[in-house]
Length: 464
Image (cartoon, rainbow, N blue to C red; front, side, top):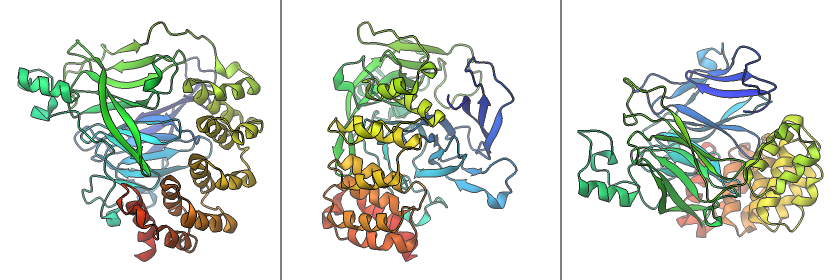
């Protein structure tokens, strides 16, 4: 929801349904923004959910089996762009779409932590990936896209949620595991299939859950919880106790999100079949559950009715539900957010400063001199995001590229070097070579899970 309507994935099209006053009654016919999404192969591994990123783009996860040939309606085949699966994004006002990351099997859900790092839930094993702009992810499968990546970035999960006896499937016979097998599955996490991703940034659940990732386990009738821990330029995800196990054998969790009260809302498809089931499906039994810690604070209101000044104050709210919606509305209005420059340059916690950075960017009030100065910031997260935003239009300029080269040589942060490697894919060959030479001199990066591969992805078109 946003920008005067509802954005919908309904294959083979990506739609915008106008509803300016958000009364649930469309103001007109659906507008097809993109078509050509794959629907032919097996009825699964498809383009699915949508989520607003902190940078103001709308992100989508897309399965590998039903590859797509995308373009605006009427685009001839030879001018369409093939997408083999992964993550793509669409800008709501410029109406531009672009691939963001390629790979995985069946990504189904994306969310961001306090530092703007994207985590994707992969429906089948392995189940979690840290998403980096321009990256290629396992499995290879000889896809035309990224054919010369050779090696791809692996999962961040240090475990699996199933022993994979009969697929980890708790569904009706003949796939029901024995008591011993079921006990093993329960201890492991319930099975290999997942759907929906939520990094908890609300204010109702205990603080230990903040920045942890939660996934619906389709076969296990539960919600898995993985702990995200920084490792080099990225993360490791480790298994924590499951948050909920449903007694109802029909429970099929699809999505989960925290609301304005900080509680978590879980959509349940509620059906008897396992995840490939498509015959005699129950279309009238879906439900939404609410999971709260104690008695959450209730909230009623309409953020669209708040002034710009009131929305700016929400930038510091503990519950990111308010932060995200306020940022989107400020983006819609292209409101004056210049007051947030003070927050950006303050000594407040880094997540608060990043929120100011993103709000300034999406509203069009993050001017290049300010953004360039952040390349000298004391926080690796601010420096990293400055790199990404300076390359949004693929034209950072000569001075910025020289600074990138300095950072590539001298910055101690592997995270900053990761963002530099990612940004190089948006630069011309002549701009990226000086940066690349300095990045490749970091022998300490050889064992990092991301950097050697990201360096190659940036270098491959240059040396080909």
